[in-house]
Length: 429
Image (cartoon, helix red, strand yellow):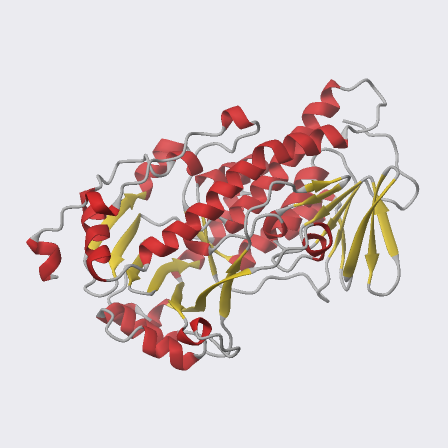
């Protein structure tokens, strides 16, 4: 794996974007002996937000990278994932996360977003990745033997490969695809607070709990060894539905969660109210690779958050691209130039379909979580009938990350709401 040297000062790979996806890709490629330069527009590297859930398809990769122990030390391995009805608090369904780890070989973890980002940042520093700040990339173009980016200050940077990991509002996506983001009309409020502030609220400190209700849901779990507690409140904004620009405001937050169960209502006053996250995604696309420019992470496949796979998909992207580069480099004659075109074709061939499934399923899950009326009762009946140890709905996503299309598992089979029998217990709740 010794590629031909690039011109002095030019890296083998330029990664645009220093978020979790960009740093994950930079680290994965640097492990193959490549010189990687990351261009991040912010003045310093960092992540905002609160908690992340990382399922076995991600912790498996962290283990391969030698980063899982550090992640365990900073995160929490919960005992269960529990879904409850947000109105009456009754349990709908549960995953035994200890059994899940036995099944898939790796844990389901929760971790602060900044902690996971810091793990990859330190890994990149140890690997010799060149990390540059205040680098605002405004345009992309292919060259005869690679690709070039144009920066806001007029400079250009070139490399045999450019990875565009520049997020939901990607300049590369705008330049190469030209589509726009899609608004869900939902907005998320977050908070991570000391655990002592919520202990009297009826919370389950050792579980990931998701309360699903009409037009809203609420997520809770512990962070940082159990010292902090993460909460996420998501609701559909009436102002967004009415086409108003000022939507998702705190008054809408309070109104959305009226009528919820006690634990949810007690959590709402703790939410950060000086910032909120409007929930956008994009329609899936078939082409991520344009010459030597490859979209990665949210630039390629920004999902709605319902499957908790956004950061994971980005980490998987970098792992898959690096694995295909390594496979082709190992088979190439000594001294041969890297077969980037082959690696990019293999990357696109497997990742597009997997991520399309995640994006479309996330949209469907959002609809399912937020049902009202008779549909809510039918959903609840179906979820209560599920066996705790039925993994038919997780096999396609929590197993080993596919490297080729034939390794991609079959999708789960949805259960029609119309098939549910709603009994007196559901109607009385």
